[in-house]
Length: 101
Image 1 (tube, helix red, strand yellow):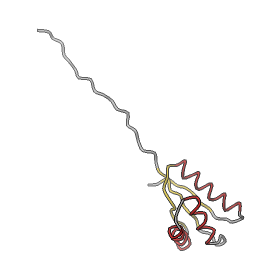
Image 2: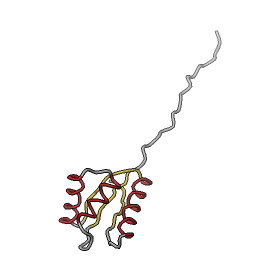
Image 3: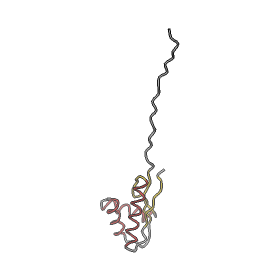
Image 4: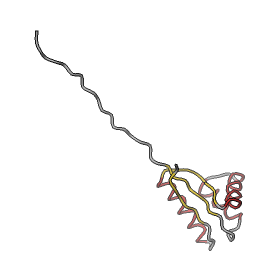
């Protein structure tokens, strides 16, 4: 009889984590027309008229509103593009991002 011990090999799988998500937040201001805010939400975030209106009204009443949640790169790109669209028309409308908890 041989004294050989056979030890089974364990397979290691790399743990892949989902990317951390970021919220795009619409900040209220008292100068940008409501119609323009709705137009930007529809164009950049592909919302329908009633959803865009509800997001705009929520931001208007509460000071800020989460528009959508994306991966970091997408969230920052969309927030930047929406803010720049407002700046191009001379409005102080602002979108920002923050990590989702």
